[in-house]
Length: 125
Image (tube, rainbow, N blue to C red; front, side):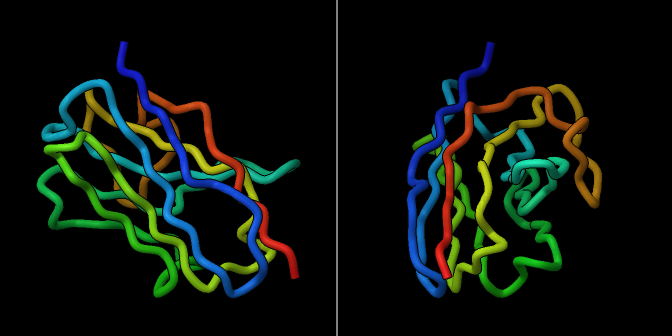
């Protein structure tokens, strides 16, 4: 069982920044890694994904230019830098790993077989 542990969430004002981290219990070299978010009453949506090899990334249109996903395979950690935060970015953010299959493009939650517990991001106006 792969464990994913997120950290870095918090409460910030609009325009602020955070860096979310996701540390895995196994190597990430062969995994597609993603960040998803889910707000109350809404479906879980893909925010950013970094595909195996690190050369291909996906960003949701709503976060392009503001969010940056990166991976440190030696540290088994995936990061999500979130800048210029907006109140509509408020949600629980989840880290996910696709280890047994390749994630699609665009990615879907069903593509990922391992999930963290989530870290809350709250953005006030």
